[in-house]
Length: 117
Image (cartoon, rainbow, N blue to C red; front, side, top):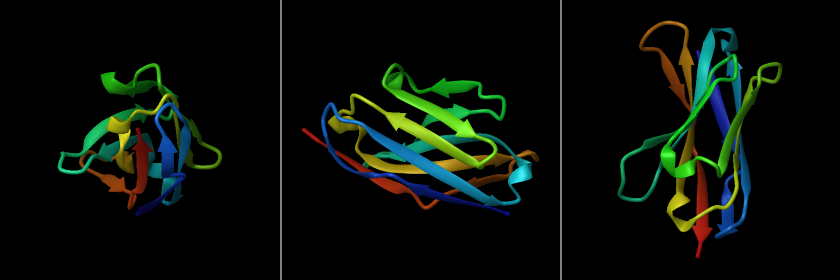
């Protein structure tokens, strides 16, 4: 089992920045891919960014150039640096980790990000 705990959410004005963190514990040796998802009010959860153990990254088009995902394997932590935030970035941000076996994944409980206009 893997436990994920997010932190760093909050209220920020448009154009501002936030840095989210996700700390993994438990069977962390089994983790390969990690990522961030978000769910805006009334919308489906969407993938925002992913990062492999080797630090290959992928982003949804709407955040490219504004968000940066990174990870510290020694600390079992993944980060999401969010710059130039927009009101449409508002939502609950969830951390997700994929295990080494197909179909195995883990979710954090989420952290709320609110961007005011």
